[in-house]
Image 1 (cartoon, one colour):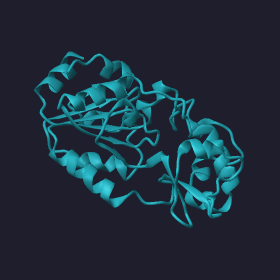
Image 2 (cartoon, rainbow, N blue to C red):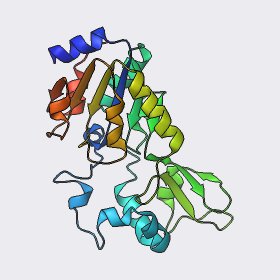
Image 3 (cartoon, rainbow, N blue to C red):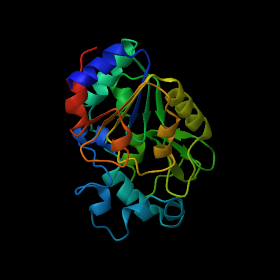
Image 4 (cartoon, one colour):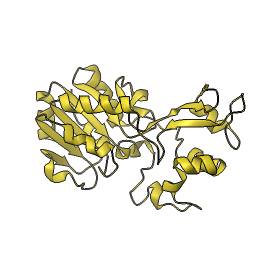
Length: 236
């Protein structure tokens, strides 16, 4: 913790790259841990349910899972989200790059957030393009439909879909130009996002994660602990 504090104190441009482990302390399950979504029992594997083809072919079953397990609208920002927002306000943090779709960084006050996998808070009609809130999706009985009759789709990146190219470009540019990159709450096994780390050319590569990752050996500082506990103890 002392070393992390020293790194943050001496940094002028920090970028934060986060995954599901950043939001688990807000009560949102991750995917790959023992209690994660991939280890729960459904009629279909979760990774199949949250695919584009499943959404198109078994839409009602997709939405049953999605509304039950992925729309955690009562979740609140935890100390990690709040500290990152404070770091941005103090001019220490350039941006947050997140694999999460929960919108908790923005709820905590972060302004510059690149959402690689989209957001549950943006939903659109596939026929006319009209926007709908996550609360509307949650309140629907059965498959959410637009007033024009079109199918509403969450603006989240499903399996078989591509990441937004503009979001990718901005994320890579931020990583390539920062002096400190903090990676947290991610197993670094989901590509292409995990591959963005190789663009880092700065001074300090920090990894905060509960479990070991394939990148531990390549980092300047590794802390195996909860993200909220670690970041919450930082002063800026």
